[in-house]
Image (cartoon, rainbow, N blue to C red; front, side, top):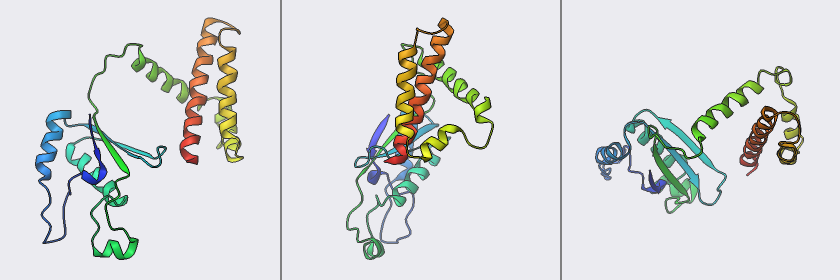
Length: 195
């Protein structure tokens, strides 16, 4: 994994005759040699930890292009005269941190996380085919829209965690744990939307 500030991502191109872009081909080669061709790029804001963007890139060139677009979007470039006039910015925005990770790295999980995450995704996907999700909106969406989403999710996490192992079979207890994870994931989504 490579970590850096978004402002330090080399320029992909320049429209100025006075600015010589850093050797982006050299930087791309370093990434390729360290991480392989397919990578995941992620940017987070140090001031607002809930802000996160990520993208899986099929090539290092795609990763560089994505990062450079984010750099331009978030003001992490060195300001020019026009930028200073429009935005009043006199220095690059250094609030954004970047992680570049290999998308092909096989991790030896200690607790079977890879298989369990795949199973959890299947479980979540299956909930969209159940009777309460067949209409255009789920009841959970109305609760979230009413401003009660976080409490609803935390309440359901507690409900299913406390019920674990006390009702039904071992398979029922396992399903309760899946529900805990699902409501926690929805709660995380609400948290990210509200911050």
